[in-house]
Structure formats: structure tokens, C-alpha cells
Image (tube, rainbow, N blue to C red; front, side, top):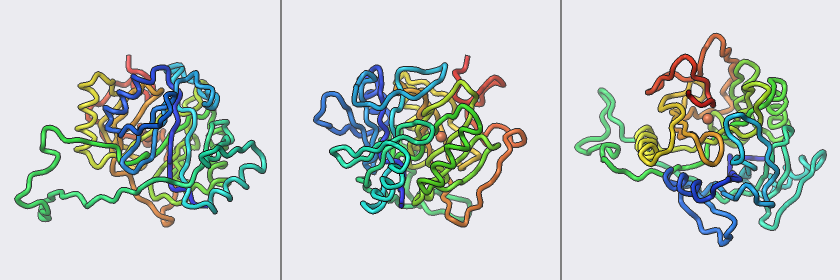
Length: 321
Ligand SMILES: [Fe+2]
């Protein structure tokens, strides 16, 4: 079975119109769903965020705990498959020990071992292929007699694709168990293990360092914590992030660069629930990659630099007081 990556994330939110404005400010494309109960927003490659009101009975049950956000939350992550054959393999695998149903659109719905709602569908994505960046380096100029696109004061930025989701687990053992489920049952690959309590994984047919992370922040947290969207480059992250701030949306952490996965990052608090992350330039890895064990006690916070370093009380995912 080949899982390409995230196809769709379905959110149940308390204020659909506010969330629609937020996603529009991120540069998502609005798609008319022809359903008044549902608003759909798409990336450039046509992977989607679906908004429904949190009271919508068609949503999977809320499975989330955090002192810092409630009500609005991601309810289901749909993974995109390469073929009908992969769809049938996943269905046969999951229905051995859990409830599975296929809806009228051909989407398979079930739950993972942590009781997060998950789904699978043959992908509808239209992969984006970008030309190499014209980036002048000392001794290797490539953009000659041409100004940089990012130097324009106003450029339009759009998320290219959904890159990853992060779930919290209430114990390191639960995070390990979730990782085992996705690796052994769904063919995911371990990319890195952070302290035996953070498991970075990529989908079976993906070269992204991670499309999925389960990590433990303590017993009071479980469920979907953030989702991440890939932009072209640092210029696009900065243009989009600055625009979001001018529209009143609150930055959480960033801009900066991660150590694990190496991606550029900027997190914003999201009215959809939790955080949303702008990312770019993640490590592209193959089966030659050897998963690392990273000791957070030795390595410290997983950020190599931050343009707005926070104080000693900073803790990822927690509001700054
Ligand atoms: Fe992330």
C-alpha cells in the first residue's frame, strides 16, 4: 500500500466564518462545496481543509484534551492513497480489528489505535512541481539582471500542500504505541525518535522527513495539536506571516528553523483549534536515511534559530504570558 500524504483535514469549529477568514488570509483557495453546512479550502495541489460547525452531527466525536484550546479542533485526518489496490489493502487491514465504513464519496473512515478518527481515499491531488529557486550565492550567481520576486512589497502567497499533522499522546508509551500502529499497520516509516517520546514518521510513499508526529507533552494532553502547510520559500513564509499579523492573527513561535526535519517554520494560533504552521524546505529523505535517536535533554529545544527568541518560560504549544 502506498500512502502519499495528507489528503484532507476535517475541522469542527465554533465560528465557521472566522475560520474561513483565517484560511483566506493564509492564501487557501475557497472551493464551493454546494453544502451550506461545509466550507472547503484547498492548497495549490488541491489537498483540502474542510470546515464544519462543531455541533455538526456528521463529524467524528471530539477526541482532544488540552487546557489551552477547546471546542474547535481537528476531527479527522484523511490520508491520500496512490490507487484502488492500496485502498483495498488498507480496508482489509483495518477491518480485522476495528470498525470501518466507506461513505458515498468512496472515503474509508476508521480510527487509529489512539482513537483519533482517520480516513483514506484515492488521492485527488494535482502535484505541484516548482522550478528551482533563483538564489544568488557567492561565486554561483543564477539570477542575473533580474530582481528577486520576494523583493516586491506585495506578493501573493498560497500554501502548496499539506505537509504534516502532530498529535499529542498522554504518555511516552502511548506515543510509542501510536507510532507502532502507523508503522506496522499502515506502512509509515520512522524518520527520527526524540527521547522515546516523540516519533517523527513519513508516509510510505513520501520523501518528506515527516508527515506525522506523535509526541507526549504530559498526561493532560491528547489529540490533534497542529497541522502544517508548505510554502515555496522563506520569502513566502515571511510575506504570508507578516500579512497574517497585520490581519490580527497571533503568532506563537517563529519565524525560525527546526532542527528535526530542518524545515523553516512559523506557528500561528488558529481559530480552527490549536496551531497552524507555515513551513518550507523540509529535509527530503529516502530509504537510505537512518532514523536518529535524539536526546532532548542533550540537544535542547528543537529550533536552530528563531527571529523572535522567547524567554526562558517559553514552552511549545503553551500561550506566552
Ligand atoms: Fe510541525
